[in-house]
Length: 509
Image (cartoon, one colour):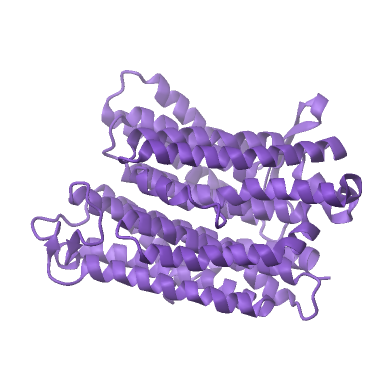
């Protein structure tokens, strides 16, 4: 089994499906949808094979594939997978077919499937590549299908939102590219592991100089911060998520937003530990801005899709808060490995758990929108619980998971983050609690206005309950939210050894 290039198969199987789909010019609508869904499911199947052979106790990359590629630049085709990558690969394997099912009735399904499968393969490449050259190719390639998915199938403001999304991301990536070019000129390497070694032993800083190191750090930080997004570089997010079609919104919020957080953990922290520590007070303030202002901005929305978009900013902010709190406390008296481990484990777990709940919520808003003839305002519904009790129950699981209700998956990740942050930066944790209050207010407002009270608005007449593809998407997601809320060790067992090693080698003095 290990002789198979499983990681290459993970990356290129969706692309192979996209190529097959593109060649089926005479395929009917149903055939195009089936081929796209089947190709997308390849990630979940291959991820299951990887899970069967994965060794959680090993913190070094596994299933490594390394081949010489561009000898003149010392560039290698280098793939590897650890607990962090594994969690995000599994998340992609779950969300991608769910998003395609949620887009089952979309027009031009063959083109939609080709673009979506290209986006899926690009995201997987980002999570598995260990050399900057092809990591950056995957990173940038993800913009192309995302742009067209938003522009061609989005809402009235889709064109503006798509261009804004691309301009922001390409702008940030340009600074990151210059930063890595400087590191290559200095070290002769673009391999993440080698650069991390140069960063840890101080040789990179010695060659670049203090000022040069800070400039390179800022360039890489900017590229990743836009993608995450880190407040205030988030202004592209709500328009892109709100205008995108339902399936694209699910994938953008659940998977693509995690690419930025992944970059912080995989690239920025290992290569620039001292610079990240020095910048941590400022970055903590920005993360808190995303948490608190994201929650309160969501509370002000009447468009349900924009509300969930700002909720995503709020929840990703918790992941960044935990990472910055760990780097802020590094080397300080009283830092404990237990607090750092809890914060880092919570970060990775929250990335996965938020992916499930955000995808489910965008799907639920898509169902409401389809039932209401395109309307999705907070005041366009009322009493949906009596009109569609099954749908209300499934949506309620997603809402209360996002709220962090004990017994659901959202609680575990947030608890670990706050457990760690309170031990590392109590003042930051206290301010972040304002975000929890804002989250409770807007999610409970959503629940009360849409699902309770007398039937009104779109639910006043015929309002069909969840059925067909709605159930195929929401039931598995709700089941996973319940399962991971009751038994979080199902995922934590793959994370704990890795974050314990991180806390020991990168955090403790």
